[in-house]
Image (cartoon, rainbow, N blue to C red; front, side):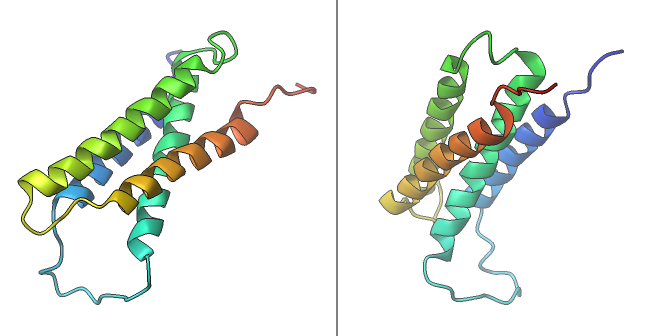
Length: 130
C-alpha cells in the first residue's frame, strides 16, 4: 500500500497560504479589523512555526530522520528563513500596499527555531517503549 503524503500536501499548502497572505492586501475588504499591538508579529511567528512543524512531518514521511541525523532538519530551517527573507523583499519591491519590516523577519526566524524545538520534542525523540 502506498503511503499518502498528507503532511507534505499540508506543508506545501501552508507555504502557498503564507505566500498569498504575505503578497496580497486584504485591507479593502469589509472585514472588521482588530487593533492588537504587534498582532502581525504573532501572525508571522505562527506562520513560520507551523510551516516548520509541517515541514518536519513532511520530511518524516520520506526519510528516516534518525539516519540522516538532524542535518536535513537544519536545511529545512535554512530554506524557511531564506523564504521569509525573499517574501519580505518581494513585499518591498512588488507590492504597493505591503512593506518589508526587519521585525517581521525576526518573528519569522524565531518562529522557525521554536518550530524546530517543538518538532524535536514532539516528533524526533527516540521512544523507549514501542
